[in-house]
Length: 631
Image 1: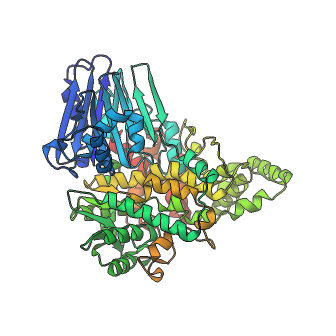
Image 2: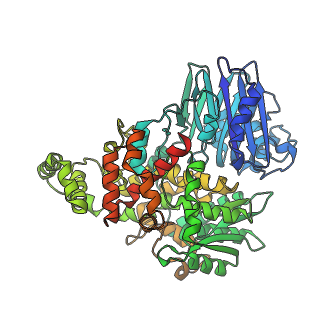
């Protein structure tokens, strides 16, 4: 696990040398790789590649990056892990390759030399973001893993193309324009994250998951997909799993065992994050089955019962026999993280579970360097409770079209000021009427999961840019559950869940591995009929059955809790003064970005007891904290 950065300069790079410029970029990523650093550059081509290393495999100097291929054609900087590299190494050795070290990076370069970039990447099982310089074709390629577990940003500073693991690396390059993208900011207020390919800056983008960007010249570049979630979901429908439920459980058990085993390969101490829920418990159970010694597991607890899962994690740990560490954190501990959020998340991000995730990562890093987590199970196996609350759509879909059209027109005719005057009641009436205007289920779902239903009214001069949630997908299925899991897999998963865990873990120099997002498991999950995932309104059926082989169901069968913190309570007590100060009308108006009157109205309503606005206020507060940190 590391941080990468670099550039290709097509004009003058100024007075600084290439290694100085790249050195400044990777210095901003030291938290991602505190063990070592390196820069490779070529004055003739204007290319520089930089790397910060968190040593996991082959701790010797032979694992250092940037690294050149044996044939001399390629140079690479790489963040992540290719877990099946030993299997690929054996295949390459049969083809005549030899290796001097034990790092997966060396195997990746040989694989690219043997099978080409696309052919090699399709063979990789892992999480990765890397930059590859091809001396023969004089191209710079950026590659991101299938689900976007590892981040990769790119942009321009004049005639210089930049890339980096985090936006702060791009900002470190002289002349990078950090002008705010108001359309992307509008998306942030809808989702509480900025979906790819957008970023907070007009001059920078995120590389989409499963994509390769190839830069050929200052004027010519292209982005291609080597793996598509849409193709996987469609293929799963047209080529469904043909076995019984018991056979599905057997196959998933085998796939999970292999995925977990591959991710346990490490030359440094390793453990698991254990909440006591289905996903983290199945990962921990399979790790313990693989290990001859008690594995290390970690959890945090809250003194507030509504947020505390510590006893569930402890029960699972006790049954499995793991070496368990838990930390009970106080409101003071959590509040102490708030000032650090904009420093590590780099752009507006307001999923409040980032706070306990950061605390858990920090605790875990005190004991191990690598940890496995259970992220991805909800999207692949239908675990979110919202998947089972779509009755309104079914009911409204049955209404005669003329009735829906008439009610939709009524919603458009009612002045927004009237809704506002009716407070909470008016807001609820408004969004239910507006939902009636939705013609497609995917539009209904986007509206349902939106933090702010009308975000463009909050951002001055902003309009919503296209996003993965608004693209026109050629679905081979009408199943609502499949549509919801797909939309979450291409937006919420990479841009919220995986962004949260990457920044929280790397802030503490902890490598976090996610076996449930092995693409082989995703492809299998997509082939399963809904009946194997959902029964009586409860999801993850096939995954639960795997877990029951290792942990009694009475220990893990319970309502889903999530990983939240008491934001509403904080804003009305411990954070009240800070909240009112940050959202002061004059302060907001002076910035000229948000509608100060709307912000003031939200704040006053919340302080007058309408607690439903707390999450929209948190979105604004996290934007304000970011803006004042970086702009």
